[in-house]
Structures are given as structure tokens and as C-alpha cells.
Length: 631
Image 1 (tube, rainbow, N blue to C red):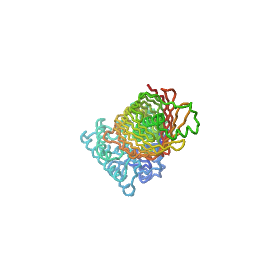
Image 2: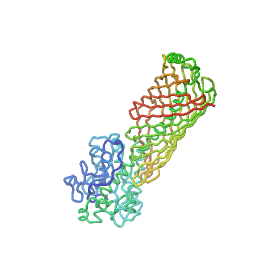
Image 3: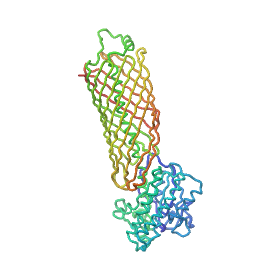
Image 4: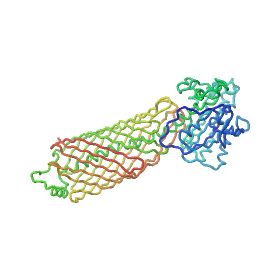
């Protein structure tokens, strides 16, 4: 029962990690004394006539602790504007209150309905309701009767929540009532057995999930915190969370002694009185709740990272093909004639040195790629760096056409801004390509498959939350161009496309069960078209022919990255959390440049760079260089 008057002092416990951008734009509180911040239109102490925010000595801020509660902590965590409080201490799930004359939860909801307000898609509803309904049974009730009462209470609570959902509530952070068995002093009928208390707590917790499961599957994000598990841990080992005692300050020290104690001493207790946590206790609850709500933000970038890795591999392949294109034994045409005339190359410098005529060659490259993305409402910002390399074999079918196969390995390391999260990835790529080069035009094509093994970690409360999954990527890409001779330069239009399909297997995180999630399979398709210009400046250096190139293109993603991520807290298996991921910027620029050079009659080398630009939410880059040996 949450109507006992208790004091609360401002907490010095650490706050949850702040997301790099706030996923929520406002917060509204409903429910009982755990959520009651004392202000209008709710506030039990205000309704009882106290000049809030000044309350009685044991509750100086008109909250049922000595300073702040979990709603205050969530507001601070997400840096939100002052909350609107509909919560009233003592409220039960229906229209009654354990404090005579005060309203219940259904009347709080009715007051919101009467206000004419609606919730926005990024408003947060903070809720605690159900605990006071446990005053409705005692030791004389059978287990069956208690379960029936809990089912009724869950129905009342679900009805109120469904009304809020109908008015636009999309994000709900809900503290479950927990189990009064773990309170510092007997609650209600002291003869009530642990089995009777557990029957109500467990039935209510399960029934709420069952009744609200359809709303969750339809897109309402409900984060129901398993308070009972935290209570049990506090009783078993309060020091695990930095508390000296699982008792209540007012219970252990008495009212005069507790009120005279320092804030640090008060907050060394998890509970303030026999029912309500201290400010530090509430802050811990809020840290858990914020971690639950931020967890999907750390999962959402996985598909984008998988696409970036596959795209980096494709960029390296096309860059190498562009770099070596000048080594075809034709195709320089008037541009080379003009260059030779301009340079007045003596006859003894001819003929030009060409790559060896053998149709077979092998090559190896090293690469380094990276990039960053800005945050979205429900997606963490991140940056990544990816060292790697590739080996390949190539066969020239005729002077115009060559085909090849390439195997690549990279090790992307991704750092996220939320919860100090990381991905460590082993990325394997296998591709086959063909390249046709004529006197003035060319066409390249690539088909590739990739397997990326993800090891994820993020910061929990008492440990590190870890995950392991894999992504399969399929790439089909092509590029073509036509180059005109313009004096000493070659220039012309180029165009291309790239289709990448990424599928990430579902997995279950390991670690603190209060924070771990079941992550559903993810899928993301990307179809990018490009158009622009290629510029070449053929050079004669010694006996070697060089043709450095620059590609400047506009890129457009025709599908977009919008999708829905589905995660489910391990402790609430009936309440999947559907997180909407918005489309990223779909039009941007890309520049690529490179050159290949003859080293000997059988050995040549190439270096290429590529980078996107003018992409509003972040850019990618890559550089690769390697050596090619002809048989």
C-alpha cells in the first residue's frame, strides 16, 4: 500500500546515461504514490490541503519520499520540460483511493480526457498503479479469491491505459507494484502469507501483459518494469546497488533520528518508510527504466552498419576496376595522342609499357573504411572504423573483357553514443565481377555475398549486457560510363546502381535479466542509383602509362531505411516493443579517385579513395591500395 507518509531528500545517486539526443519530448505522470510528484492536477498532499511544494516534515516536497521519485528522475534523465502530474498517492486501479476522499486511477484518466489534450508520438507516460489494490485482500482470502481480485485490478488498470492509448499515448514506462513481502515492515494484514502476497503480485503482473499485448503488437511501446525482482535483490544484497540497508530510514532510525540524519545517511537506505523508496531508491528504479527504454536505440543501427560494410566492399571492387582501366592496350585514343604531343615524348620512349599479356593475375589489397551517423529519435548516433583487406584472382577473357573473384575480410568496430554500446564485427565478403572496356565506354558488374558476425555490448546497471548475432548481406551492383576525348583529358557521364539486402538473425541478450531483450530478426533493403561524371588525365611517366581518375556522382536511395525494430524484454515476453526507425537522408554526393601504376612487366599497384559528402546525417569514407601480379 502506497499511502504511508514518508520523507524524501534529494538524491546524489548517479543518473542514467543520457542519450545523445532525447527520444522523448514531454512526460506525464499517472498512478499512485510512487509516481505522485505533488503538483496539479494530481498530488495527494495538495488535495489534502498542504501548501505544496511544501509538504509535512516527513514529506517536504509533497512526494512520498524525502525528495524525488522515479518520474522526477526520468524527467531529469531525458532533460524534459516540467512534467504534468495526474498521479495521486493512494490511488487504486478503479475509482477508489486508500486515502478517504481522494480519487482513483480511473478518475485521473477521466481528468486527462476532460482536459482535451492528446499525446504526441514522442511523449512519455510514466505510470505506477496497482499496489494499493493489495489492501483489498487479507489472510482470510483463498488463493483463488486473491487471484480473482488481481485479475479485476489488472482489468481496471488496462482499461485506463487503453484510454490513454486511444488519446495518442505511444511510450509508456510502468513500474509494476512489486511484492509487499519485501517491504521493511508488514503491509496490510500481518497474517497474510508470502504465498498469498505472491499470488496477487504474479497474477496482476501476468494479466496486465495479457490484456495489453494487442496494444503492444499494434505499436504502443510499453516498458513494464519488474519491480519485484529488484526488491528481492535489494533484500538479498543491498550493497550490490550501493545501499547499506534494505530497510526503511524511518523504520530503522525512527522518525526523529531519520529526519535529523544527513541526506547521505537517508539515501543509504533503499526505502524511506515501510513502503516507499528513498530518493536514491527511486533513482535506481529510474535508471533501470531508462536503460530499458534506451536499449532499442543501441540495436537499431545494426542493419545500417551491415549495409555500410557491404557497400565498402563494393566501393573497393569498383575503385580497383576504375584504377586499372587505363592499362587496357587501347582506349586512350586522342587523349593519349594529345598528351604525347604536349609532352613531346621522344620516339625512344615508345612503345608504352603495358601490363603483361598473361590472362591470369592475382592481387591483394589492404583497406580502411569508416564513417558516422547522427542520431534519430529512436536510433543512437554512432561512428565506425573498419580495417581490412582482400585477395582476388582475375582472368582476361579477351582484350575487352575480364572477370574475377575476390574475398574480403574486415573488422568493423562501432561505437554508439547510447549506453556506451559497441559492436565488434568480423565481416567476410565473397564476390564475383565482370568488367568490359571498349575504346570509349565501359561497364562493370558485381555480385557478392557477405557474412558478418556481431558481438555487441552495452552498459547495464550492475553488469554488461551482451549479444551475439550474424548478418547476411547480398549485393548486386553495376556501373557504366562513356568517355569523350577532350584534348589531354577524357571526361564523360557515368551511372550506376547498387542493391544490398541485409538480414540479421534474431538473438537474446545475456546479462541482468531486468535489462536483457529478445531481438527479432531484422531486414533492410537498399537500392541506390547514381549519376555523375568521370574525369581522367592520362599521363606518361617514363615508359609507364597512368590514368588517374575522379568520379563525382549524386547518389539517391530509392527504398529508404525506414523500418520497425522489434525487441521484447525478457521479463515481459507478452509485450513486444515496436520501435519505428525513420528514413535517413536519401540524396547525397560521392567522390571517388584513384590511380594504378606499373612497377614491372608483371607487377602493378593501385590506390583508391572514396567518400560521401553533403549527407545530412553523416558520411562514409574508404581507402584501399594493393598490388597485382600477372602470371
